[in-house]
Image: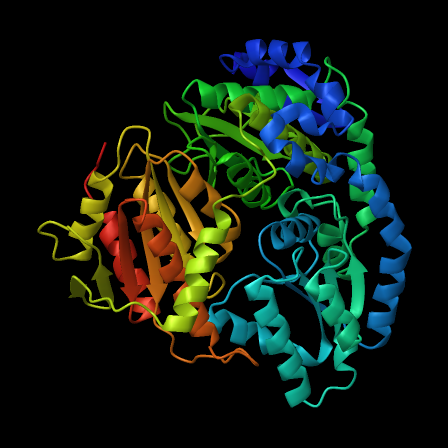
Length: 548
């Protein structure tokens, strides 16, 4: 705990313990010598080397976007009043990655209802379409304007509104996209409400741009307070001293370079909800490339398994917590980061960019994300690959190669754990309904309780816009458990020659191809009965032996 007593704070945000991380002080000294704080505050694109300069030049707007975002506030207040006058008070957000994760954190933290649709699972899409359709306003968020998931959601909602005979269908959409994207032209053609985002900010850094603010403001949140918090904190970012975000970035980078390249993220229960999921996509997609990177591991609670190991840097996050009160059921985190949400967003963006410099990677590109998308497009055109299960265990079909003598789910999971190598990790990837089938997420803690290796969990396909980059571009030490489920009632994607179920299956198959093409160990479990299969899987996990 003594290391946590050292604190750096600014504008209500405190970082405890970062300087005590081995190598952090030395890394901080190098950053100071390189004038990194001043250069980053000035949006200097040369900070990450010549290969990154072109990408950085158009992706550093997040440094002060909170100022430009204030221009949106009158428009958002006017739009909310207009929609409410039409009786449209159920806000649905169709977005992926940074376009959905930041708004979800904001809404959950501030206790405001926001329905997030970030899946292609037909069960979840159908349920969302059936929820208060007559009073729904749909925020369709896509920076590129070509995201297949959000295009599918827009089509499904437009058809649902029309089929229900609801008036003013176009007015029920709010389109958020970059200037000049195909979605801007589509919004104008539809006559939909259009809000243009800051084009100089990448998706995962977009929390305080239109992508984070539009859906939450329409849901009733005073987003000006978030901008105030960020602006207050921004005053600390130029200096070498009393700059908690710089120190946090130095600690993240130094820890990774010294072998602690897994980042356990734990909510400390003091008012910020779901921030770990947003940090996960920010850090993983920004740093996981060129065989390097930091793998975030979102841990459910301080006493959940998987929060500590020799290669794990343990960090708690929350709203307000003195260092002597850091929870953990005996677990002492290396770092605690506490403060208001607007400052948290800016601090983690800054720290991630600093860590990218220390690791020698470009924190603003995602060179491997397109690979799974390309596989998906090809599979949608040519059809799913022919696959036969290695065996069937009750409601679970087991797919894999070289499974040894495994003939049960328990044995197949044991085989998968045995594939873990020193410094490796296990990623559980579930293409299911994350609301009605949320029990599937319990598999992470169950598996982490049976191995010393870090275990992550991601809902498909949204992890493809998050940790998917790290899985392919980061250190080649991942082992993967993919879970898919039978579709009992599919849903067409209007205007496309495929259904949501076929799209989801193609996304899962495309990612399998990307991973196995890199010779990553992968086990696929297909639940022919989702509820029974999940129960069987959890029971199998509970019976596993310990695997070091």
